[in-house]
Length: 314
Image (cartoon, rainbow, N blue to C red; front, top):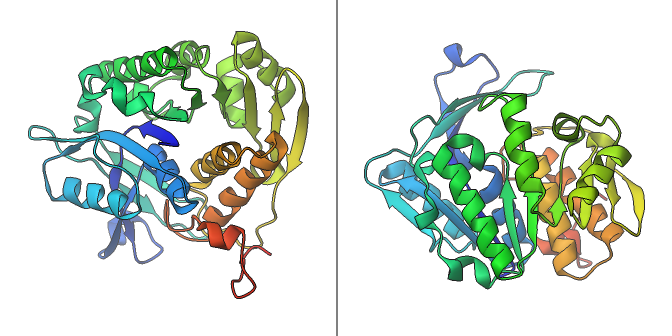
């Protein structure tokens, strides 16, 4: 297995019209969740990926599992919960503004994940364990589950990739900093956004925040800089990698997860770090061109097109 990831995925409802939700009568249904977004993006790039989670034993749970499994992701680690529901959320389309998101996830099946949900063999065969800062924010048992997964990965010498993905709707900056810096200290690769890095380290520049993470033990830090691209640092090298111009941004949600998938894909292909970050920028750019969390992620033939394929970003 190339990558194993774990976390909550919700059913996403998006109005077919651009208006406040109170005026919306028809919705399109899809899914969204940072970890499954990464899993799907990686699967489309030809990698083997396992996604572990809890879903409600309900129609939305079946829909979510089937959707992710249909993208080629291993869902054998999914547990169907008879007592708690699959979470849902709504994305409100706004003209000339980023979409506004409303979550209905309190008490969800995924928030009841426990360390017993993760078996050692589910992680031991992976090239990377991917985790985010969303999961430990959902509940105490979710935090314990992430810590258990990290311990299993370290026991089996599986490198850990950590995207802080801070959601201030779930906890305060202080709570996030205390918990996530503890997790980051155990991870090999850290992928913060510039704002997240500042919240966690107190540093304002990519150079300084990356030095702090490297000082804690990380081998690679890649700071996402939005349209400007990204900055990466190891003990041996550092560089800025420019972003890819996207003339018309349709939906920014999911771009960061696409970036993470691109970086991981590059590393799995044994590309250099700069090339891996360039691929991250590219996958993130694709995500910006299509509405929805996962709909814009490309397949490998789009990234490395034959003569009869068109790359929409070229």
